[in-house]
Image 1 (tube, rainbow, N blue to C red):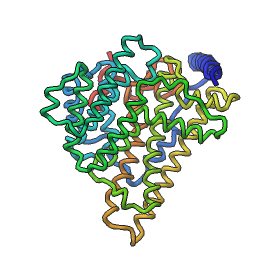
Image 2 (image 1 turned 180 degrees about the horizontal axis):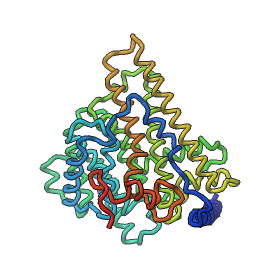
Image 3 (image 1 turned 135 degrees about the vertical axis):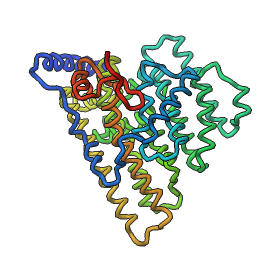
Image 4 (image 1 turned 180 degrees about the vertical axis):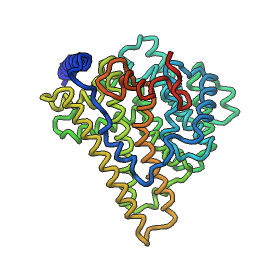
Length: 402
């Protein structure tokens, strides 16, 4: 497998450049991502009618000020990433909870944009050393989360603004999360994310003994642990304060709720793989993306065939998502289903729908993945400008393009 990713990367780049030339000569059209199965979810009756959380603007302004205080705001990235939480959690009624969710995304994106696994190979040794030291402090902080309080936090400042910001975040989260079981599991998921965050994943290898779907499932679980999607799915309960009594669920309902959580993360990852394909695979020459991995699994596939296969895989997962939503609705409509479990489960489905749909809405609205030249219609600057998507997002509003 060592030589295969290199040859696939070279072939991918060659085919990509040829397709760009065809688009420029008007011999081909950019790939329209509208057939992505996420559009099926937009018609679900439990979908939130709001594209973004009604409290978004004020929350984003507060988090921007907070991030700048700790030195974790970048004008190059943060105006876009600061808006994501409002798309993922439009149901969140508590302004403090929306703030703390947005703080978490600010922390994760800042680390990812400056030290993340996909740029590790391009960092110089001093930068790698700084990233590892920062990560060490973050993990130590998380391990001691039960002992953190306002007094000790004030006297143990780190040299890293990110670590100090993380302390504030954890203190606030401990106060707002009134469910110790949820909090303990969130900390576990967050720690797993950080353990993968600064490891270059381009040596990820497919298992020749597994089929395509099985290999993609293994890949997506790793991708989600790294990207923070599993952090997002944990937020689906905190976002509304409606916590599932997991130990009280029937085995069937427990499986259904866990399946919808995993599918939410899968849908987010596959969608992001396509929107960030050029940033990752063309400009950074990464292999850790479902498109090149599909080309490795199917050596006979062209780049366009691999993209089509990824779209098909996305749509299959979206259909599975809808099927599971239907099964959950059938279960809770049974007269014998415990009444005290219904509200939290319905809220969970609503949150899962919002988080899945946000993969389309936020990535369409943000300029984070836009390019002057692109094989995808929705990331092409000329198309985005024509339809009003062009311009850095700040509080959900595109700023004028000079």
